[in-house]
Length: 77
Image 1: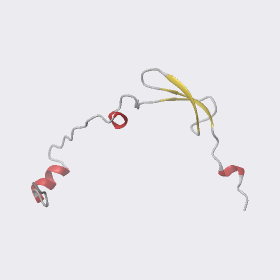
Image 2: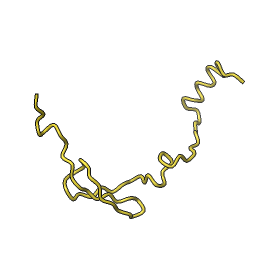
Image 3: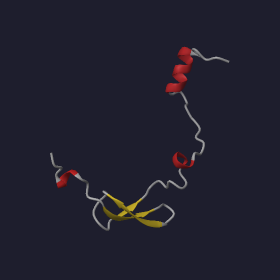
Image 4: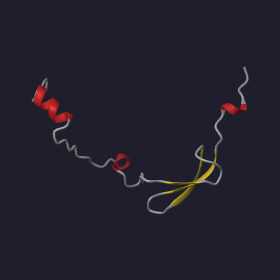
C-alpha cells in the first residue's frame, strides 16, 4: 500500500526569535515558509530547561488538605 503525499507534514524554514532577541532559522511545520515564531518562554533561562529549583507554595491547597487528612501515611524516617 503506497503512502499518499498528504501523509507527510509540510516542513519549511521559519525564523525563531528568543526572548533576548537572538534569532535562528530552523525547519518546522509551524505557519508557512518565512514566518516568524516569537518565543514567550526562553529555554536558555526558564527553570524547566535549565534545571533550576522550584519552590512549592501551597497555602491551604491540595497538599495541605492531604497532609492534614492523612498525616505522614507510610512515610519512613
